[in-house]
Structures are given as C-alpha cells and as structure tokens.
Length: 220
Image (cartoon, rainbow, N blue to C red; front, side, top):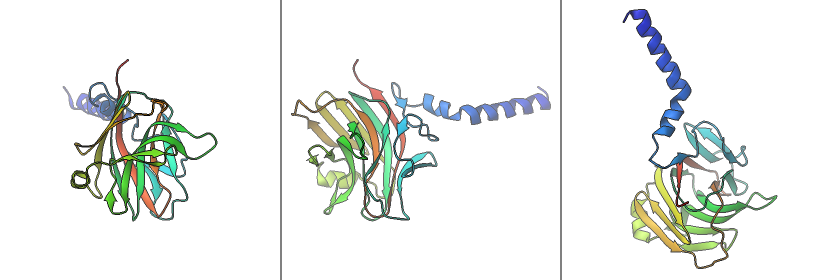
C-alpha cells in the first residue's frame, strides 16, 4: 500500500470516528440497554434549558454563580414502566440537593413533577444518597438506606454509580454497588409508569451532574 493510500485511509477513519464516534459508544452499552443521553444534545429530553446545560458529556443542572430559585427537572419525552436504569451522578456546592425521578409525571403548567425520586445530598446530618423520596405526592421519604452502609458507599465530589430497578410494585436502588433500597409499594393507586428526570433543587449555588444514562426495559 502506497503512502497516499495509507494517508487517505487514515483520514477517512478519523472522519468516520468523528462523525459516528457516539454511535460506537452507544453500541458498546451493556446488552439490552439503550443510551438515553448522547453526551452532546438534549434530544429526547425536555425542560428549562436555562437551568440545564451540557459540558464534557454530562448534563449539568444549576450553577455555582448564583442561588437556584426553584426546583427544576429535565425530563425524558418517553415513559417507562418496569425497567433497570443505570447512570452516574455527582453534586457540587454547600447544601447541594438533587435527585433522579422515575415513574414520574409533569404537573400541568408547573415546574414541579410528581413521582418517585432517588435522592442525592445530605439532610440533617444524614447522607440521603440512594434514599427513596416521594416528590409532590406524599412529600416525604418513603425509606432510607442503612446509614453506615450508605456513608461508606458514597464518594464525595466524585462520580457515583446509581442503579434503579422497578418491577411491578418493587423498587430497588443501588449506590456504587451497595443496595440502599428494597421497597414494595403497598398503595395500589400509585402509577407504575412515567417519565424519568434529573433534578437540581432550589437553594444555594450548586450543580448536579449526570452522565452515562442508559436503560433496559423489563418484561413485555
């Protein structure tokens, strides 16, 4: 192969990688999972894009420059019922609070949502990463993980791995490989389908970052 042909092929390979690099990454996600965030655009998501931005392949909600005026949620356009969700998340800022919503609905003509939340942050001296909160519905924590196990699993100022698994009335959450929640919903009126969302909580200057978001539908 002559030099000119090798150069052309190298250039073509580089061009293809630049054009389809994300597709290569998407094809390499775990078997049965689909990528929900392409690392570059908000395709498939909706929300206040003044609050949320994309930097270095991550969704970032909030800012370190000023107070966060209210809760904001970036939601998927698709709904999910039984699934396993995997992603990475981290927080920055004093008093930072956020979470990952699932089986959730938008409240019409309002910035809030209603549904389950895998919580992130600290409250009253407790690490609530991986706790299960009921946003805008019962407005309370449904269950916390074991305090010692959660504090040991949590990685301050680093990316933390979440797994959220919903099957029928059962909700399970893992933080960095440690199960924090195994909850059975006893209220038969609670809906089992809805959108997913990432949140930044209203309050002091803070940022919530999310990346490598992928999901696998379970059952039929």
